[in-house]
Every structure is written in structure tokens, then in C-alpha cells.
Amino acid sequence: MRALFILIVWLLPHFLEAQKQPNFIIIFADDLGYGDLGCYGHPTIATPNLDRMASEGMKFTQFYVAANVCTPSRAALLTGRLPVRSGMAGSENSGNVLYPFSTGGLPQSEVTLARALKTKAYQTAIIGKWHLGHLPEFLPPAHGFDFYFGIPYSNDMFGPAYRNAPPLPLYRNKEKIEGNPDQRTLTKRYTEEATRFIRDNKNKPFFLYYANNFPHVPLYASDDFKGKSRRGLYGDVVEELDWSVGEILKTLKELNLDKNTLVIFTSDNGPWIREKQEGGSAGPFFEGKGSTYEGGMRVPAIAWWPGTIQPHRTTAALATTMDLYPTFLKLAGVPVSKSTVLDGTDLLPVLTGQKEEVRDEIFYYARNKLYAVRKGPWKAHFITRRSYTKEPPVEHEVPLLFNLEHDPGEKYDVSADHPEVIAEIIKVRDRHAATLQHVASHLDGGYKRKEENK
Image 1 (tube, rainbow, N blue to C red):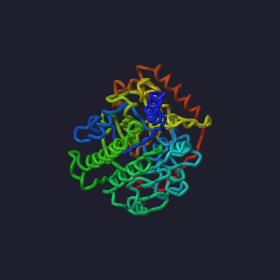
Image 2: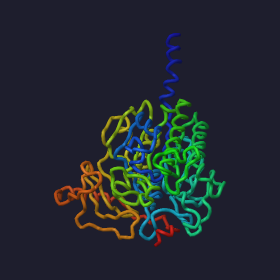
Image 3: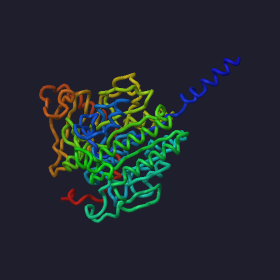
Image 4: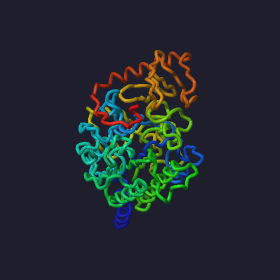
């Protein structure tokens, strides 16, 4: 009997550890390109912490966002739904992101990851960029976040460039605590807040959404990083972001939370190539932010969960930011309403090595229009448009067709050789269209940069 008691006492902590709800952290960079990290092939940007994160976990080579610009991409991440379903996709008449004087935002009818996880007693926080509405009814506290420290939209949306928009506001929860904060200090301040949140909630399940404002322009790095990268200021900013990730992973390990925390690192869209050397690199892909070519919507992504995700793994599985929603909810034991149409798929079988694929279709939207569809290795462009151009979109009577496994740079149209593939993708498009209901845009445009109005 004594031996049985000793065995139970020894096993109990291990049983309780196994029963713990996992913690979740999403680290969301802003405008980081597929080719901007060392582990994705950049020759002069040093990212040792992200490289280590990839070697200790899983690196995705075919990971997508649901939109090619900030606001709709973030809406999709937090709801698991294409932004066209929530009215967050925008339209030709409403613009495609929210601005300092916009009056719209993510509707309350949408159940965010934070709100869903709150039903299982998770502590929730967002640190960094929100960009889903700056009015009180749209801010993070209204969408399930217990703690908010950050900026409600992009870090360039202030001053004369935005027709004398008000000073850039920095929030702590519902209160504006600063106007035009020193952006050189933002990454360090965000890191301090993130690690403090983890320490304060080490004994509770938590969800941390860390959406750094960088490397979106204007670029700022602290004195510890400015001038240190061989890639110039852009590299300085990315290397400081890498340091920030390292501090978060180090904190998890110090607190023995690493084996109970799933961490995802990715970007909200491709690089802003219009910004030239102040923008990033899409690596082997064509175009960038604002386009539905691969460079605009295929992004770097790393998953880290020691003990659950085996190290040194690279996957070519087609995955999206929308997959995080059902994955986290399933792990947390949160049921999804049967009336909610999700576009995400549970990624756990891929993360644990049980499956190589969970989907074979990707939909590429620009605002509320479907521009392209991927089916397996094939991608058909029904509409094309270069990013940030005055030229109108081009609608193709015969869609352009690319084999992305042979031609990831989308250089060689092979539509004439594969009419049967185009016919199949048209069926996929039509089936998808049948699942959509018209939703009015919640993006009222508000306000555009001067150069976007020229």
C-alpha cells in the first residue's frame, strides 16, 4: 500500500501537467517578407533566435494570410474566417484598411480567439498593433482581451502624411497614455509588457497576441540595434524583433512553461516593396504587400512547442493564419458554434506529424473580390493587379495558370497546356462562392495617405 501511495504521489504532478490547458502565443510581425529571416535564406539579416525557434520546432514553406494588407489580415487571424464573411475585407468604395478617422471596426458579432478562450478561463492580452477599429466599441477590451498595450493602427498613421491626423496614440487598456510615443523604444517596451504578462499569469492558462508594429515603415530601432545590421535600418529593426522573440522564449523556459505553450511566429502580409530599401524581401516570390501574387500573401511561419512539435521539421503543408483559430480552440476544449462558418482547419495533425496535409485549396482575395484560387500545386489568377499601382485590375477571360511547385515566382503561364486544371479550379471557385453571403463593408475608408489619393 505504501509503495502504491508513493507511486501516486510521484505520478500526480505528471498527470496534472498533462491535464493543463496549453498556453498560446501568436507573434505577428507587420510587413515582414518571406525572405527576411536567416532561416528563410536572407544572407545579411541575423535572426539567431528565430532560426533557433525554427530548428527546435517546425518551419512552414507554404503558409498564407487571408488578405494582402493589415486590417483584413488581422480580422481573419482572430476570427478564423475570411474577412469577406465579416465585412472586414473592404471594397472599391470603402478602402481596404482602417484609418485614424474611420468609424468602423470588427463587429461584435464576430467571436475573436480571445473571447472564445475566455470561456475556458484564459487570461488574454494583446500587445502592439490592433488595427481593427480605434473607437471604444471596437478596441481590444471590447473583443475579449483582458489587457491591451499598444497602438490602434499602423505606426505611420499620424501627422501631415495623413492630412494632419492626430498624434499616434499609445493605449494601456482603455486609456490613451501617450501621444506620438518614441518609436525607437516600442519593441523594448512591448517585450517588457509581454514577458511581464507571461510571468503574471504563469499559473493560469493564457493567450498572448503580440503584434509588433514593425518592420512596417517608418522604421525605428533602439540604440542597442541601430546601425548594427549589414542590411541597414530595415535589418536593424528585424534583428531587434528577433531579440524580442528570444526574450519571450527565454522567459517561457525560465518559468518551465515551454512544454505547455504553443508559440506561432508569422507576418500579416508580404513585404511593402514600394518602400524599396525600407521594405523587405519576398524571397523567390513575385510582388509583395497589396497584391495577390505569392509575394503578397505567402509569409514566413514558425511553430514551436517543445515536447509536442518535434525539432528540425520543415513542412510544405498548405496552411493559413485562419487555421490557428480552430487549432487553439480544440486544444483548449472550446466548442465552435455550428452556425459559425470557419475557413480555418485544425493544424494539430500537421504540427504533431500525423498528417502531411490538411487542405489543398487557398483563396486569394483583394478587398471583397476573389482574384485567384490555388488547388494543390496549381494557382489560377482570374484577376491580376500589381501592388500600389494606378493601373486598373485586369480580368482574364482565360485565367493565368501557374504550377507553384515548379514555378514559385509565377513567371510562366501554362494555361494553354492545362485546360482541365482550369476547369477544375473554376468548379472550386464556384463552390466557394456558394458559401458566401453578402456582408456590407465595415471599413468606411475614413482617410488615405496623400500619395494614395494622387
